[in-house]
Image (cartoon, rainbow, N blue to C red):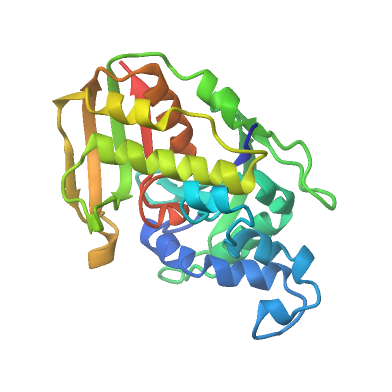
Length: 300
C-alpha cells in the first residue's frame, strides 16, 4: 500500500520578495483555492449539486473515514498538501514556494497551480516596484533534480510522481544525524505547546501525521512498528542542542513562534530515519500544511 506525492517548486521574482507577505497570503489559501475551482456562489458546499466531484471538497473537507477502525487508529486527516517558503537571494529579489501535494489530491494539480498563481498575484507591490512574477514551475524528484512543467496545454504534463514507500526505503543510512528545523515548529505534547525540543514527541507526532495521510489519501495504511519506533526514540541522544523556541525573522505574532535551529543526534535507527525522511515532505506540528514545521534531516 503506497501514498503518491508530487513536489512542485514555484520560482517567484519580485522587487521585494518578503517572506512575511507570502505567509500572510497562505492564511487565505483555502479561499483562493475555492475561487479557482468553484463555479457556483453557494453559502454551503454541501448544498451544491457538484459536491461529489468538487476539487475544493476533495482537498479541504477532511472527512472522517466510514471505517470505524481507521477513525480509531488515526488522527483526523490532515490537509493533503504542505507548503515551504524559501528565500533564495540575499537581496530579496526572489524566493521559492515549494508545494507538496499528496495522494488523491494529485488529481487536482491544475487547481493547485492556478491557486498559487492567484495567491502570488495578491501580494502587494513594494515601493511602486514591479509586481511579483512566477518565472518557472518545476517538479522535483527525491534526489532534488528539477524538471520544468509543461503548462502549455490543458492539463499538467511531465509530472514527476513520487512514491512514499520508495522514499522510506532509500533514506541516507546513518546513526549520526543533523536535524535542521527551518520554520517555526509548533509541537504539542499533552495538550501543551513544547518550548524545548523533545525527539520522542517529534517522532510520535510525525508517525501520527504520516500514518493518517496514508490512511485517508493513499492506497491503504502505513505499516510501521509504532511501539518499536517509540521505544527506539527514547534511546536517541542529543550531542549538540541548537534548537530554541523563538519568533521567526518575518513575524513577531505570538502564534508564529516555535522551535528553530539545528541539533545533532546519535543512535538514530534506520526505521526512525526512514519515517522522518518521509515526514520532511509533509512538514511537522501545528499549521504544517501552511509552511510551519519545515525541516530536513541528514546523515553525518
